Length: 110
Image (cartoon, rainbow, N blue to C red; front, side, top):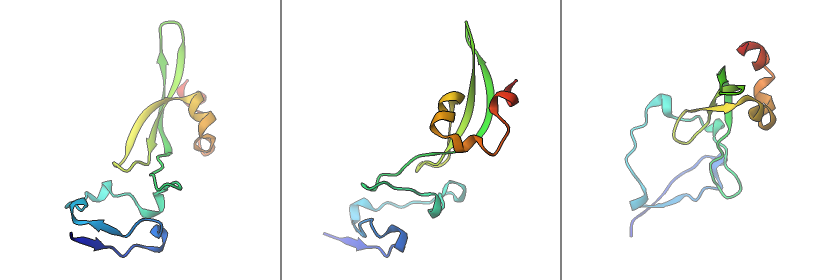
């Protein structure tokens, strides 16, 4: 069998450096889709950790009996930038650091 040993940066020392030739694929990465190395986070089992990066925008969603605040969140993802709409109160509990640099979302949305 054919295998390649890669020279990895010190930050990636926990990643196995030998790959079988069948695992290697040609990749023509678009520069905007490339994730900077300092943004990549992995857990103890070397799984990619996807975390919210910033709040892009916010709006009020009118339901039948109530209104809720939702925020558009940009996530760091191994597939490139990913955007999702999330409930503002849940994101504030889960990631309060995203709300410290700007005006409160409730004030912006109203």
